[in-house]
Length: 153
View (cartoon, rainbow, N blue to C red):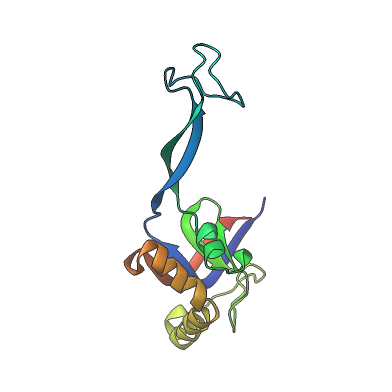
C-alpha cells in the first residue's frame, strides 16, 4: 500500500445513517427457532412453514444512494480508514500535486481564489451526487470541504 496526499475538494458525511431493511425468513409457527432451509413442513411437528417478516439495521452506504439515484458509482470514492469522506475521481483544475514535488512550499493563504474555484468546480461536477446525498443524509450532515486528504491507497 502507498500513502496518498492530496489538496482537493471532497465531501464529508458527518453522520452515516442507519436504515431498516425488511427481510423474510421461513420458520415453523410452533418452533420459531427452527429456520427452514427449503422444507415445506416442520420436521419436528409437521406444521406448515410460514414466512416471517423482520427488519435489520444497516448503514446507508453512499454507493447505495448513488445506485438508487441512477448515478455512476465510481465518480466519488470512499477513502479507506476515513469514515464518511468521499473524494473525487477527477483532479480539480489547477491541481497542486504535492506528492511528486520535493522541497516545495505553497502559501495556501494566497490561494483563496484557487480554493474557491476548485470548490465551485466540485459542486458543479458532482451536483447530482451532492443532491442525492443531501436527500439521503439531510443537508446538514453533508458538507463540501477543501483541504488535505492523507490516506492509504
